[in-house]
Image 1 (cartoon, rainbow, N blue to C red):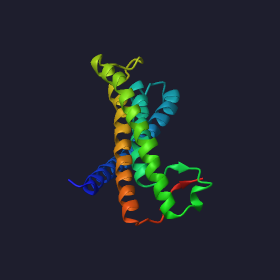
Image 2 (tube, rainbow, N blue to C red; image 1 turned 30 degrees about the horizontal axis):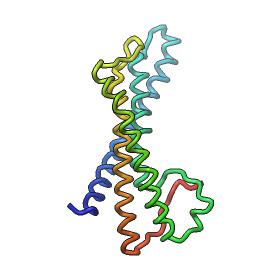
Image 3 (cartoon, rainbow, N blue to C red; image 1 turned 135 degrees about the vertical axis):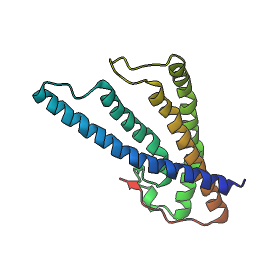
Image 4 (spheres, rainbow, N blue to C red; image 1 turned 90 degrees about the vertical axis):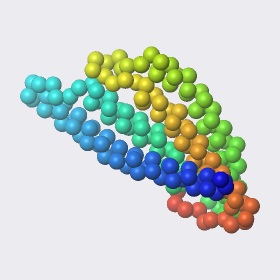
Amino acid sequence: MSLKRISDAIESLNEKAGTVLQWLSLFMVLVGAYNAIARFLSKYLQVNLSSNSLLEIQWYFFSALFLLAAAYGLKHNVHVRVDVFYEKFSPEKKEKINFYGNLFLLLPFCLTLFVASLPAVINSWKVWELSPDPGGLPRYPVKTLLPLSFLLLFLQGLSQTIKGYYSIKEKKYKKEEQGGHV
């Protein structure tokens, strides 16, 4: 399998993850709205309409959205960056900065955090870690999001690095798309 096909497969994976996250954000908002309304009505009806598990599932949805969207954001170049100098650079120089930044900063960072998070996640699964709150949810699924998010971000960084390599090699520099520029 060629590097370009690997890059395309990674991009497809993160695009699908982004689609799932879009739906997850809807569920998160619906659960949050229910929690807010239930707390309000509980005061007046003198009946508890909410639970710790509903509060925690909202927190889990937010955690998934925040952590797993990083790779999708990188794919679509929407991460915030302070580009006082960067915006004035030529497309060639931007491509080289992105290539070397991914290769020497992003990829090692993601790999380090992926490896560093594994022991805590493995331990959480071993002991079937639960929420300390009554009626709370298991903690091991949400803890699994941490290494998964860094794996997806690593893969997307790898895809960006592969595309950057070919762009530099073939001297075909794309004009910078939208981004989260400050």
